View 1 (cartoon, rainbow, N blue to C red):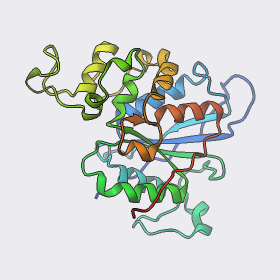
View 2: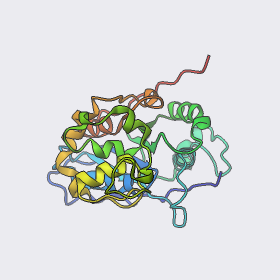
View 3: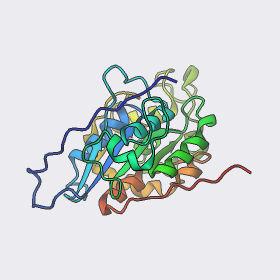
View 4: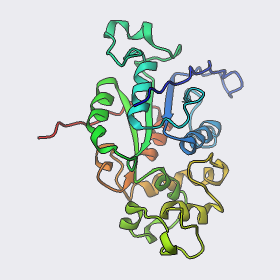
Length: 265
């Protein structure tokens, strides 16, 4: 598996923010693809409208140039561990006494800041890596933001009436082969992508998102997410997403969520 590196975030200038409250907690969001990245850029840029306080800073951490296609969840995790100073360039563990010295994020405070990896359950061949991903995330306090089958479920929740769709159809998320799902949609698109496109007046998976189409309904999405599974470990096997919980915690900045992990018996 090829090595993925994350860029070093630029120091955040909050002088233009209303009030004089300093940034007290940072959310480092490392996402699988451009859709997720642009969504959380939208969250960051609309913090005040979304009820996220000035003392919460959202850092969407991009990948190094030339590494945009590297997006396997294990690559994301390893890149986080390297940036946090927990592993060296060869993937070897760094002693805890050396974590601060090896950390690539100058303003990262491991006592209060939150590192999140945001990825889809339907990633190919993810099954054999899941236990190790959860084990390492629990060990190093990294938050898993998981969607099953993928992030498009979270996007769909921004539009009313999600209960009209069959849960099994959402979970299987089949391709529109031979126009079996929708006569007026591409045979190359999957069920969720088509539903979002119809509701958002256009959408292409894997591309940057027009956040203004989703911003007004973030509260609705959080509410409708409660109709499905929201626990990251259970989402591995059930329809659901934990993206809503992340945004809720950004609002109240009490987000040191523990990832539950149990060894297989």
